[in-house]
Image (tube, rainbow, N blue to C red; front, side, top):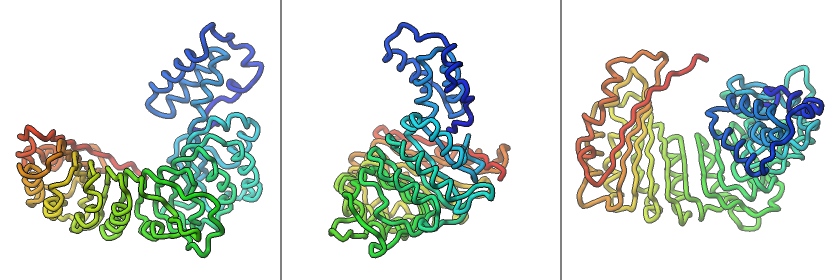
Amino acid sequence: MSPQSIPLSFLFSTPIIDRLMSSPKLPLDILTLVIDALAASCSDDESLSELMQSAALTCRAFVPLSQRHIFASVTIDNVNSRSKNPISPLEFANFFTEHPYLSEYIRELSINLPATTSQSESAGDIVENLFKAFLNIRSLEFLSINLGRRFSVTNWSNSPFSSAIQHLLRVPSLSRLHLSHLIEVPPDAIPTNLKHLLLESVDWKSIAETSSFDMLPPDLEVLTSNFSPSTTALLSLIRPDNRPVLLLKNLRRLEITGLSEEIFEICRMVASTSKVLTSIYLSVCTQAAFTGLYDAISPSLGTLRHLVLATADDYQSLDPYHCASEELEKIADSKIQCMTFQVSTGCDLECTTGDGWDLIDEVLTSEVNWPCLTEVRVEVKIWRFQRSKSAFDETMENLSKLYFKRLRASKCINFVYECHDVVVPDI
């Protein structure tokens, strides 16, 4: 959320606050519960902003309580018009330097900045002012960094903003980090207290080019890798003190999107290291998508409870899971409790032809296998450029009746089928 979307005179002007009704005779914890309940009732940032502004105008006691929600999530963005209520880096620096105590409320910060700045702003001045503003952020929990433009990547070392961001990476409370469209990222930039690392089109520097490792490696619980084949290199890196760059033994959830070769390699490396891996999400963007699935996840079959297999039928294969049943048969004696199949398709494609769906239905309902399986979900997402529906939509909505007769009739497995359509917005 952006501070400039709030009439600041109402929130910070002393004369205005003095004219507000004095604090009600209720304990502070009760007032806090009231504001928190109001905030929880909001469905989006815009409604939250309006509601918290109204609450702040009610009485003095509600001003700091409302500010805590208004500034909990902030986006710095002078490029991406799709961001809701973004604030430019210069505006952010000026505002939070003038009101440093508000920085304590920031829990989530998204930084979407290009390698170059607008002609009217000096990059050097902006970086210096940003650094001063960032120094007051001490309770950050989530940080998202994208220093490149759309459909491009930026060298971490070449970005004028990377030096200012270094402080944020050392905030002790930071537990979730999202890095996007970056190359030559130094491995020692990964925070030591990190629990969830999300990588999207990221490449890494070598250990030899990294300055120092003066903190313990993070003990991850969740790893998300989207189209970042160099994640395999990151998982293999060993620091000069013979510790791995990332500790994976306590990783419980793995989420990977990409080509089958790269995601299976990442999965294999994690599954062979983690002792508590319970959830795996694999989104494969190639034909014959799940050939090799068993070899990739077999080291974790003793702990794995939820497996998600996602694919897009972009190749008009007519059968997105045509080879999945053979791999599923190999893991039929596992302790998996829930299987989810996610399909993304266009309304002009036919992914209902073939025997893949029937084979999955047969494999998952075998009486002698799947001793712990209690739920199977099939989730279909249809992408379209307009809201009108066709005969294809009716076919997809009735897919469960055509191809999952055994699962629908099963008394041991809860079968859930969902079909949603998504209208692609105009760019």
